Length: 520
Image 1 (cartoon, rainbow, N blue to C red):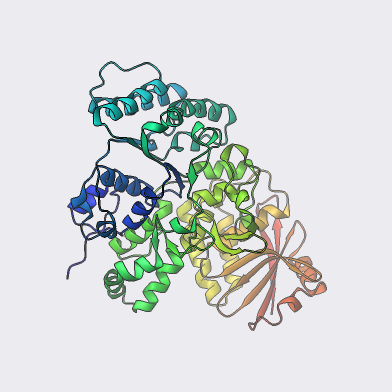
Image 2: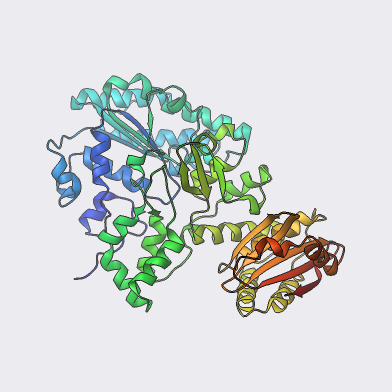
């Protein structure tokens, strides 16, 4: 039996079904939401997680296209299949725009919907036009109207760090969304997707009855591909991938989990795989970094710089839901944006304390994020040169040759232009942390506490534990003396692996490693 083709880059439900491409059945969630008694729903998920496909599925469902749902879960659940007027607005094209451009964009989206309902002489403001559009569709059809808004926050995301511009664009969007409350008697269903939550956009500040399902257990798997779905609906695909890569089925599943799994969107969420990366992996028969290659997270980099977040601080932490589900305008930390954008996710939940454990989801995100951050610590670095040097270091460390790896790092840093504002140990600690993290095969942590102090960098390989101490403008021997004096190695005596101590000295003027010493 031939496998169905993968809908890579296709976000239209009707096209996927008509072309008989692979569709992971999410229609039970569609039925559940549309029969819950609620009217307004909001779902936050990271980019490339299937939000647009979900919106498109709602559009086909409310348009009464029963034939598209044959063989899916909803076919047995739905008895009526009523057709409603559907207004579908995609805001993803409204990025990187000034106020006037955004107003023109919204006007064009409204005009496209107005033509469908014979409105040729529209009112002036976007809010009055949306009101007229909903009223006309309601009166002509005799049925309540469905409003679907995909990526409602797209016009505001890239300016989230610029207060003045954000205020201007937010006012435009607030004006556009304002009729949704006033028109409530004429609305059957309103569904919005996005990445983050802008509380001062009218949909949240005025619609007090909107249900945010982003953290609900019953909708945790509505986007993405759950582990159960992978093992059942894509079971044959796993076998084909395993054969192509000359791996066992178990090895292939483990590799897929390592690279693309690890997401959880509620306290009791099942494992969720990144659908964009997973489908590309099956399509290419290769474990690539697809999610990062699909777009540079510029707004995230800008916010990391604004909040002065160190790379080593991105990762495991404890938080209440309010700390990572906070409105974007009121960010006190970077945590909400990291979570909502998909760079950290839920890894555990304690009911007693109501604390969530957050961490990086998987290898693809960890490597991709730090590759994006490295150029900001090494100005003028060419990504390709850095990738080659780091890959070579990884080989040497796996062979137990730390001396050779540091020599290679010294040669590489010697090719990087001088970096401003680096006259402190913390900068070089972050550089080493990023580089060692990008070695990908090893577990790396910084400022690890011991009874007598903190080790700058701890790196665990398959067969060795490295304790690395850094000094600036001193000597490698001084770094080693600190390791020995404070007996850092005793803290890790029960790790079951040989411990190797490494003292490294940076020269601030050269912006490079000056010397190092290694002791077993």
